[in-house]
Length: 118
Figure (cartoon, rainbow, N blue to C red):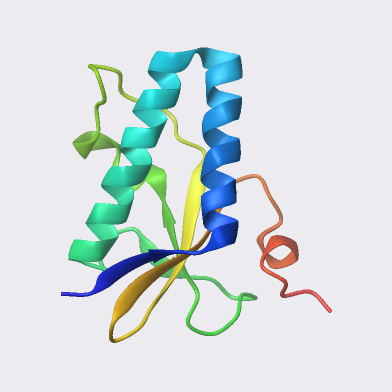
C-alpha cells in the first residue's frame, strides 16, 4: 500500500482553511471540514483513480485534482455534513506514495497557484 505524504504547502493550506472555517462558521463546521479532508485523503489513498479524479489541461504533467464534493457522502464529523465543499485536493501518484501538494479553493485560478503560468 502507498504512503500518504502531505507537502508543506498543503499542510499550510489545511491550516488556513480550518482557521477560516472556524472564524466564519464555528468550531463544529471546522471539525466537519477537517473530517471531510481526512476522508478525501483516505479515499485517494485507497483508490487514486477513483471517480472524480481528473487531470487538467494547463497543469503540470502528472498533477491530478479531486474535488472534496466527491467524498462528502462518506464524511460527517459530529453529525455535521458539509453541504457544498469548495476545495480541490491537488496531488500526484508515485509508486510509493500519494503526495498531497495543495488544497485550493475551486474559484482560484489553478495554473497561477500551481506555478503553471510563465
